[in-house]
Amino acid sequence: MEIFLLIALSLVPGIMLLVYILYMDRNEKEPIDLVIKTMGLGALSVIPAVIIELAFGEIHPIFNIEQARSIQVAFLQSFIQIAPVEEFCKLIVVLLFIWKNPEFNEENDGIVYVSASALGFAVLENVFYVMAGGFSVGVARAISAMPLHCFTGVIMGYFVGLAKFSISRNDTILNIVKGYLIAVLIHGLYDTFALSGTTIALLILPTIAVLCYLGLKILKKGRELSLARWGDTSIASVAPSIEENFVDIQSPVLSAQINPVNIKSNHWKIWISRPLLFFSAMFWLLIILGLTDETTTDTSSVLGGSVILTAFPIIIGVFLEFSYFSQRKLQQSEG
Image (cartoon, rainbow, N blue to C red; front, side, top):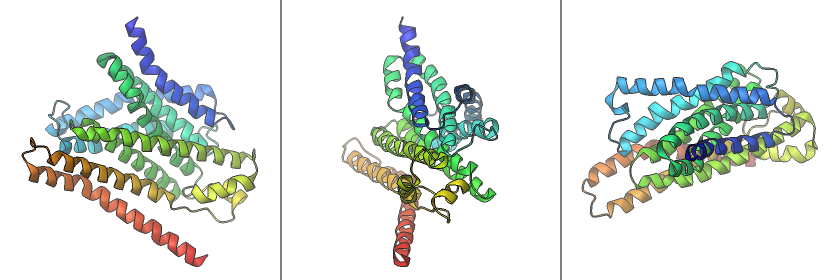
């Protein structure tokens, strides 16, 4: 009986998340057989992901799964060995097998299919972890790892949808790369916290909270794009929210319906910058609290490693904030 409960605990969270994504896609529904096929291919993509990740261990000892982890090791493993590989495997399923399918006929379909691939990957991975770790691992992954895979898939899928209907090849490539890099960034931060073996692991909770918030917002935007494209709602009621919130909408159809000029938005910059700056601030708060612990002996090493880990995210965050407000100020002066 216990084994059936564990299997159910492995599968149910992913199925529930997929059902919600399909519910948000109810305006122009995707064939369920194609969604299931995508999910199955996503599950199979676990195999090349594992092979590649294990191969890293043969390249350098620091990528060996037996390696004793510190925050520095966790960072390198997360951003070089794990997140880029897993997100690429989930993405390539859609680019190879779904991209040219005639059912991929609107921007929101990118969300549906990439999320299905991500959830297939997550569900199969979840089965192995839960069967090995038991009920407590299943519960922990249901509220952390499953939403991680799902909503990084939603974010990456949103940009894949934009890429599919971009006007130029450069815009297509840019959107795919943009979505992939954002997914890798979030996934890498999550894994760094999870694998650190320190109190920094507590940052998993705010990471997932922010990710779920962004993911739900993007699901809503994907639905608005679908409604605008197929004319199932008043363009007048949909257009303002799209113009205000959307990221680089480049669909020729939507451009013709909503605005003669392609809508451009800088909101993606603050979607990246503010989580980066927030996580960096939380990281340093935990470091400072940790240094007040009498058991901390190597203060200089801790501070040096912390500077190395947070310098790049802080620089990127500040740059994006500056760029966002500079362009916003310019637009206001022109308006």
